[in-house]
Amino acid sequence: MKVMVTGTSGKVGPWVAREFRAQQWDVLGVDLKPPTQADFDWIVADIEDLGQVYGLIARFRPDAVVHMAAIPWPGGAAPDKVFRLNTMTTYNILQACADLGVSKVVTASSESAYGIVFHRHFFNPFYLPLDEEHPLLPQDPYALSKQTGEMTCAMFHRQTGMQAVSFRLGNVVTPDDYANFHQIQADPEDQKTIFWSYIDVRDIGLAARLAVETDGLGAEAFHIAAPDTKMTIPTRELLAKYWPDVKDLRTPLEGYATCLNSDKAERMFGSRAQHLWRQYVR
Image (cartoon, rainbow, N blue to C red):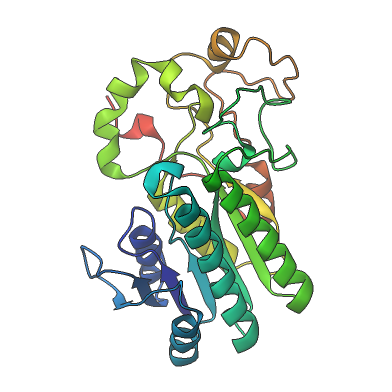
């Protein structure tokens, strides 16, 4: 089996590529620059150029594409560039896959799509924990690009029947990031708008592979997040202090339970985080 992974010089893409390689998939990594560790096949290409995307897919003939390339926050470039690059690269991948017969695509959405993380005007979530049915109310170009990406997946699914799923990722951490957790835990308010969420890059890779290896997922969006928060303070205490006006709690949120409910991903394709911060932080 063959998979093309975009964003393999970024934070997430290399780990996704390594997960597939570990399971004996043929992998082609794609990005604007080479990966820092070339332990998989890669090529330099600009996926904002639809012609280049057609060429890559026609040449490599992947069974699936995992699209992780993006500008990952609204301050990463001028607002129009953030929106344009994130939406057009997703569109180009899906258009080329639709025309060239690639039937499975995984794309990177974000918890930011709810509009709370990078809000201009503060608002409370309607309920917690967040699930995939909560309204998306973006207030910035990054969040809007992620909502648009999910809608693009849905359109191509309606058009061709392709499986085009979106991962609403929690706050992404690499193995090196665990060294900073004590500092993060000292300031819970700084993590308030991401609800103290996290997901290890290795678990994103696992989730991507499991989604690709599962049939019948359609164009669903899925939370991919650890089942606990980053904090050493119980979740209900955090909510009482930092989100006191959120009264609709739809699960008990006992202990250190996450506010990003990932039950849907576990139920539909068996994805559950394996790398939790307490394994790595004393």
